[in-house]
Image (cartoon, rainbow, N blue to C red; front, top):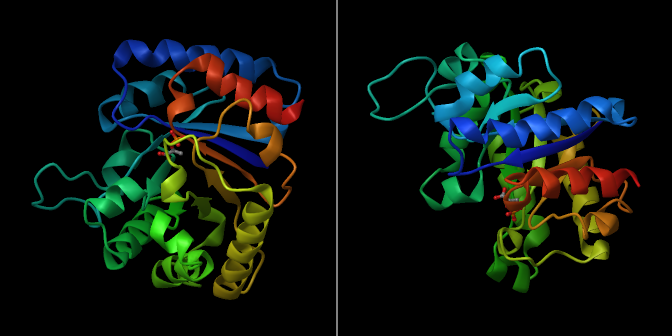
Amino acid sequence: MRYFIGNWKMFGVPKSISILNKINSYYSKDKNRNKYRVIITPPYTLIESYSKYFKNKKILIGAQNCYQKEQFSSNTAAVSSYMLRSVGAKYTLVGHSDNRAEGDTDAMLKDKVRYAIKNNLKVVFCIGENKLEKKNKKTLSVLKRQLAKVLEKKFNRNNIIIAYEPIWSIGTGKIPTAQDLKKTTIHIKKVLKGIFKKNSPAVLYGGSVDGNNVEMFKEIKEIDGFLIGGASKTSKKFIDIIKNYYR
Ligand code: PEP
């Protein structure tokens, strides 16, 4: 199974559902539709209405983050996995570099993953090195540490997807070389096998993916799909990624 996950970040109002409607009609008619899943993570404000609307359709709705406590708490503006699930979310991102930059620690991320799984959300756990770490050839050790600090064998690996998102690639138009990306993805899967003592969960790539460069990514069979930011806010750009992937 391949995954095409759109991360809308701080984008979208109720009428933006027209973007998803177009993606959904493409997806419903695509002859390759059984090979992949489309998940969109709009902002919190749209999760309930979009989940209701797409309840019996192909697209699944997820959240971009969740709070590190179980159900209800006294933390102003926080939203828990329990609350997300109650309005129809099926997935949640955890550990996006935007949120790590705003203070999410490994300990907080571990709780987010734990409670998300407990509340029946599938977790898309984001990892990635920054520019300096890449320059200093620390990519593989950074990724290993990010995985090992948060994931545990007892977490149900069927509910976990990893998104490898090099920070220097997000929103910049810069992408890793095919050779580097293949090596990194194999490394991530090896680390995951070590943690779970079973086959690795799916590993996605994220960072400036578009309809042109997806041609290069599709050659790397170890990559199980994509986390797509900018190009998920326009139906044509998002559909082009899927079209060109299966071309
Ligand atoms: C992201 O922020 O998760 C992302 C992958 O963004 P972009 O595709 O715009 O680089």
